[in-house]
Length: 580
Image 1 (cartoon, helix red, strand yellow):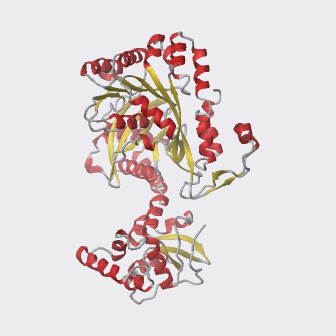
Image 2 (cartoon, helix red, strand yellow; image 1 turned 135 degrees about the vertical axis):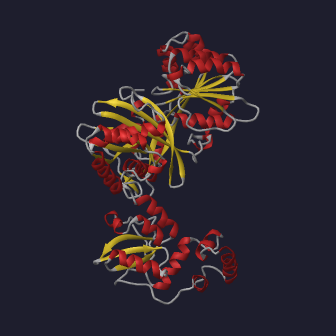
Image 3 (cartoon, one colour; image 1 turned 180 degrees about the horizontal axis):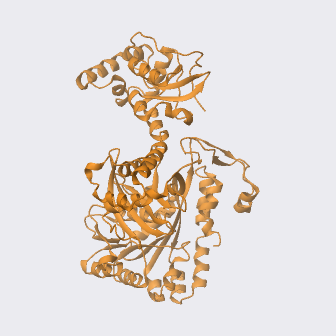
């Protein structure tokens, strides 16, 4: 889809006359003469571009300026928010030149290259772009902000990564000595192939919004994959012989034991990517064909969400807040790996964090630094386990304790005792739903009376992918989806739901971003009594009855009906809860 003010009929070059942007905007009534005087005074003082001053001062929008230029030059205006450039011609103009000249090739038309420029009156930029293409070009005007966003989104580093993997493979040769030589690489060797390859991988991962990078040796090749919105996407395949070099380099910067290849190791380091500092959590694991490396990317500029931004329904949010503000008890957040449990816990701590409350956490690892909170990193290598830290925490006079995970019966029992003796304890468990979570504590050997008297509430959650707003379209319900929806939604219109068609903004997936769904179980008198009787079946039945219409499946369907996600994604996200 595209928006144009005219259709080009021939290869066009902007007129050689000098166009004064301010006079043009006044003439076309985009801004007033008084606005222009103010903007010109600001330009004289700061030396900045007039168009940028006009936009930042709120006198006119970028699209208003671009459309005015398009009318003056009699060339099209393209709204890049609704236009999908042809990815096959992007490399005709390298990213550095695209940013420098504020230009992007959009499509091939009538034997010419259709090029969008933020400022077609920049004659030097036009001449350089024409020289680089060495083909006839047709010009269009695009808004500068949309152009820069499109460059960030569309210029992937796949070719660079592939070229660097080949260069590293050539440099590596077959000898072990060439691998060990990587130990000598320091800050001054930023141009070494292994360093440039990893830097480029991080840049590409951040560009597409990946949360994890997987480097996996296979039988005949090395696979590099990115996890984007919870789903793994292949990035490239490389020669298997570079795998040891990548693992070694990552171990060195993480401070791990480079001689140990038989045991898993965990580490952490920071990397600077385009002016952003990114914390990287690294995990290595020996596999059949070499060491697999997985890296979680955490931008230091990203702060945890607040409770208001977690996406809970208002009534559920009010109930969850009430539980958090109780003086003592255990609050559990549950779900599979990668379901956003830690984010929810940090949002809860943000709610509770004030000068009159002492908060101590024990985590592995500490993902975000929270001002005013005492955070402890567990370390099994020196016997600084969760249970040992918890015992020490209780002597530190805390009001609120966060336990990163209930990993073992000892940790669980200490945490529940703390909850019984005047502390609010927050923690996580890996269970399918809220109803089965207290039963899991019983399975871990925690006495029934402790579970019954300590657990105040359980929040179960999943993450569902949101349909891409750029390519969403009505979706007709399939017979399988209708069966899953059930009788309650039998009357829904055939096209009441949406699905993404796939575009450059969502990398062809049809989804962009994620949203949490939740179910909240409050432990009332009836549920506490069934727990005290150590009657799991009775408790689970009563708990599920208490949450009828408010479960994960119900939340997923509500988001699908609201057009936030697709039915297919709602089914996938709540599939683990179907047996409930």
